[in-house]
Length: 215
Image (cartoon, one colour):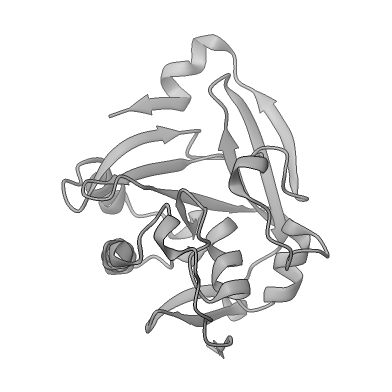
């Protein structure tokens, strides 16, 4: 496993406006460790990966944190643990189907920000995660296929996190060539703003209880 080193973060004069305060980072580390103890590999993903690579930080205006886990590592004991977690997070929701689109959201009890845990699925040519709208539309977000020997480690606030090794290719595939340009979260649509998103399917209303559960 290679270690990817980014530049040290510069002073961010917008720290006081952070949606996720830096003092809450210990809770994210706690969740990372919970995942690892269940023999799974949590990647930084979506905006959390971009924040680490572009800013060596959590993007000031982002409202959530994202992990990705390859579905081939899915652990039944972890699913039970995440559904009954009590501190420092509580389980908020489960979306999607286990065989194609599973996602969990937990929320910080103290700081009230969500962490989304996406399971990653492989096809012959690419890796994807799914997101689901309240209207039961399922979106797919695809990346160059991630394999075992393309897993690296990156450092964020003196803690190691797993990241895809081909980081530039991964970032450009999702955010485009102008990924270094910051875009306020309030102007970014999670379902259509990314370069790698597309509608996969719309679940019928009778499936709502199968693809959507709030705890």
